[in-house]
Length: 303
Image 1: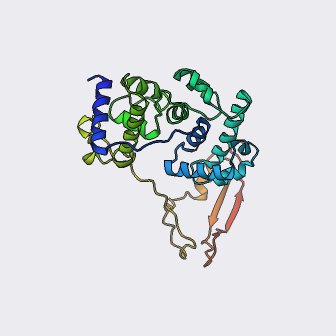
Image 2: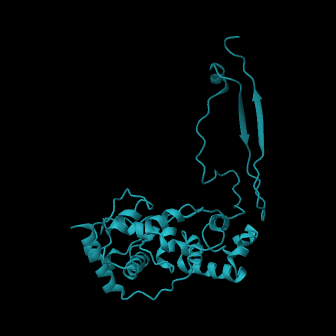
Image 3: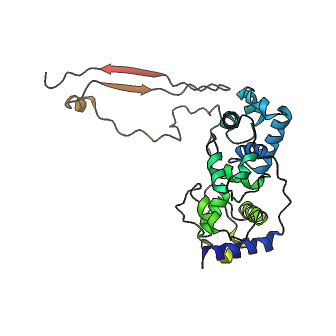
C-alpha cells in the first residue's frame, strides 16, 4: 500500500475515534516562535503557562532582550532545560532584531515554505520542528508539518518512515507524504490527531495497543515491549549499625596471599590497607571509615 494511502486511512480512523479537532488561534509569528522554543520536550500546557508568565513579566519582547537570564530561567522553570531556553530565547530574538531591525516575521509570508523554513533555521536554537510550528500555527499559515518526538515515534511504529530515520530527517518525508489537496486546516487537524494518539494510546514506555484505534493498520502491534521504568535506589541515612557484618552491597573479600608468597613475586612496593568497622553515628549524614595504611617496601629481585 502506498504511504500516502496508508496515511489517509490512519487519519480517517483517528478522526472517527477522536472526533473534530479544537479550534486554534493564529498568533503573531514572533509569539509563536517564543512558544515553540518553550515547548521543546515540554508538555503543551506547561509551555503555554510559561509563555503567559513571560508575557505578563515582559509586555514587549524587546524588554526580554535586556533582562537578566537568571530571571528568565526562574520564570520558565517548569519547562525542560530552563537554563538553556533562557539563553536560546534571548539569542534568537537578538539575531532576529539584528537581521530585520525589529522583532517581526511577517515578511516570511512573501517567501515560499521551503525558503521560510531555511531562513528561520538561521536563528539560534531553531530546528525544523520549531520552524514548521511558526509557519503552520501562526497567522503566516504556510504549508508545514511539525514533527514532535511523539509524532516521530508513531510514524516509525506505523511504518510510515524507516526506524532508523531521525526526528529531523523525518520532516521531509512526512510532509511529502501528505495529500496535495490538504489545506493548512487539514494538516493542522492531522497533527492534532497524531498527538492525541501518542498521548492516549501510543505512549513511549507502555503503549496501549489493545485499545488503539489504528491497531489494524499498525505493523508493530504486539511487538512493542514495554520499556522498563527507571528507578533510583537510595539508602536512607543513617544506616543501621553494622558492627563486623559485611555491607550488603559489597562482595565478601576473597582469600589473600601470605606475605611469604608475595616476597617471591617481582612486584613493586605495594600498600596493604586494613579497614576497621564503620563509624556510624545516629542522626549523622556522614559515615567515615578509619583506615590504617602500612607501606611495605620490598627489594627488587634484580638488585
